[in-house]
View: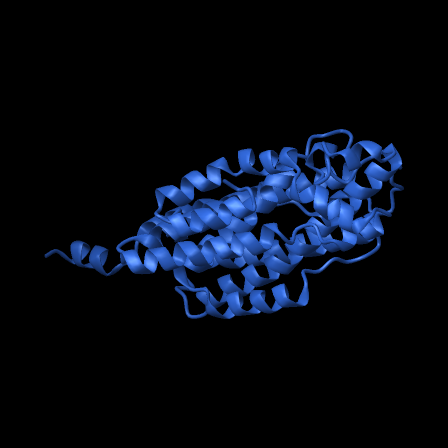
Length: 304
């Protein structure tokens, strides 16, 4: 065996590092800064929505049709503030997962360097979301305390494929909402800019996570694969079902019970989520993470 062949056998899989190198270079060229790019003091046009009306959880329902345009605008602003705030919650979880995974990593390799680039991006994104929420509605939204505790459990127990599959699913879910709104001129301009920044930078994070998942799934036993699939789907279930908190409807001046009832049966919103999660479901199926048990959880939140 030659020295070169021996070195090749002792070197970890190069797929992740090759992708990571490209992503490090992309981040250096294309990263954006919302703190300098957005004029945070600019007044908000009262006619502009917080997200495209079609992405409201109540769009298409009788309740939505009864609302004035002003009420619809207010609702979408609170809805998107909740989505951004819950985004902050799971981005903080994701940062810990990545940092723990790289704790004693190969510091000289692109994988480690991009992992820290991702963490830095997530910190900036969370600040961006926090400032946007403050400007748009002046309040914060959090998942219920029980969900917060479950997030802590996930934070401390997720490893390998579960960790990066969870990262991928969480980022894809937020990406779905933002892609649907980032070029809609009915939406507040600074929110459109935030969506553009986040979609651009999260596309790198999702590429990194996909490579990590593929590498982690290689040679995995059927039992462990089924466990990873189920655990990942549970994470998705809790994230999607908590994106828009019930307090949103109260703060928008709506009847909370009626709003929740109409949201549960809103076929338009369910179809929007399902059609925009097709790519994610195809990837999970391709790597073996779309088992029968996992499918049940994704169906519960209309991702499939």
